[in-house]
Image (cartoon, rainbow, N blue to C red; front, side, top):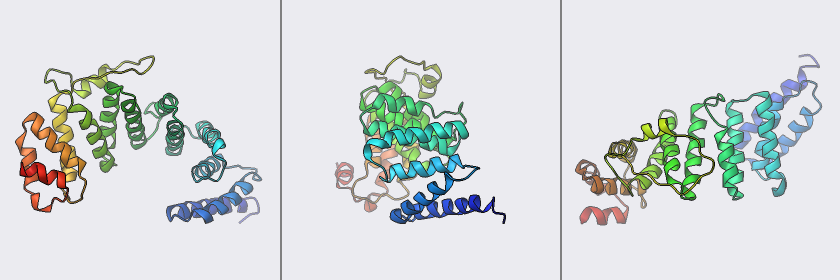
Length: 275
């Protein structure tokens, strides 16, 4: 090992150790090690900006810097990663973290703008695009802009279904919760709405009826996961399916749940199934 490569290899091994400590929940040791990594990286001729941005992002999220500086630090990480490795998983994660900071700071429009930077055109992975659409859908729903919220949740559900099925179920549930309020068999499907969607200047208070075929698709996604284990004292997923079964008069969904009645623990579901 030459003198020139030794510090770089040391930094790489320390970065792996830092990641291990984080995964184990050993925050205190991880922060101490991160300080050493950052100090060493600033003295290297071949500076690893990507690792530095990752470590600085983690430190900001772990509370290693003053709260008033967290936003600027996360923005620095996004900008640095955009210059050295745009479209990478780490760049997408940095954008997600910055958007979450904006949302927690009650800057919902800035959060939406930040999330929009995560896209297939930019080269980001499908799972990160799905997570960004999920967060966008939640923000839009929170301000009552339901039409684009439902589109974002639907895109998130589709995007996460392969690699993150549990998160896809969450998307289906949040979409279905809105969809059951207004149903029209003559309304366009979600896929059609997504294709026909056009940019708007600003969000607004919008709603849209849902197509029964989309409700059926979302219910099937929820049931495929929910019926694996129907225990638990609060099963909103099964409750939504029962609501959909009654609204669309699709008795097979209720029957599938009734077959597992002896395993159900949620008192609300038990009352409904006994009625």
